[in-house]
Image (cartoon, rainbow, N blue to C red; front, side, top):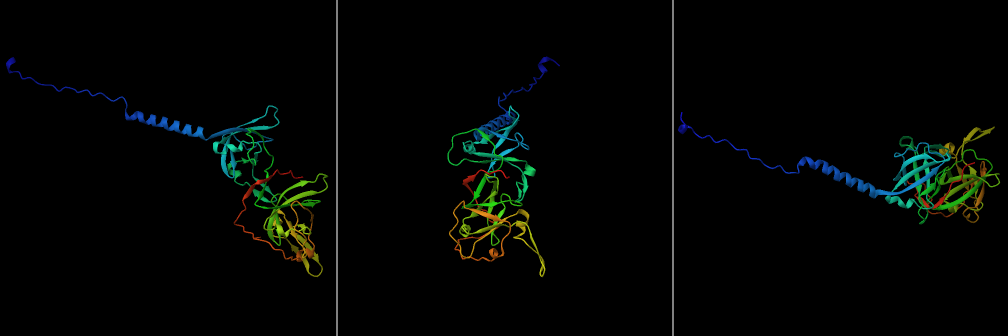
Length: 317
């Protein structure tokens, strides 16, 4: 075959396309970086002031786990728990959320909530699972900014709704405690707020709070007695008899009061009364006619806390 008979064969040519510099695979880390930046910015925006609270002991408190609450809402968290340089106290450093910044003011109170089993029942049972937490109570009004606090040993006494406080004097306390009920004719008219030893250490002062709807029943000649426990009597003719105010009073203790058929003027707030160990029979038979308004008891409804009336608790004797 000569050269004139050869046929020309054309080969295909490769076409090179330029690849774009940005591919979809790079979008994943870019989106992740933007998302992380947004989350960090949001966290920074939610940060409030840092506070330091000094407690006698901090058993159960853990950094980055224990929370700070107010009205059941998480308002901050504990960042560190350490001893003071003199090893006599515990210094807890926390961070409040921005919306709770007003808690960092002069007059605010912080205390540790732990499970308690006492005369008035079980308190803070949920902390058995979740662990202790720090409860906060804001100051009344607008105090100056403050970032260092001394933690309270006990929760402050909060008056529930409107009412009047009275003081009962007893030589000896057996079953009464904070939150023990106060009864009138078997209905709960209030509760015990706190107990304290008198200045001369001769009697125990029992501070009771009576709801506003029951307050008109308390007169200057009213009488009060211990309603806790079971009263056992033996009579030759009738035999053995046992009486009790109700089951709750047997378990938690309680106080009852009665007013004579000829009531005197309404008792002023803070008036003192003697707390008798047992009632006289005639007290139980009194049926005075006293005008009251809405003195009803409902187990389903709970009164709201009046944060404008806060008393610091006194240590029990």
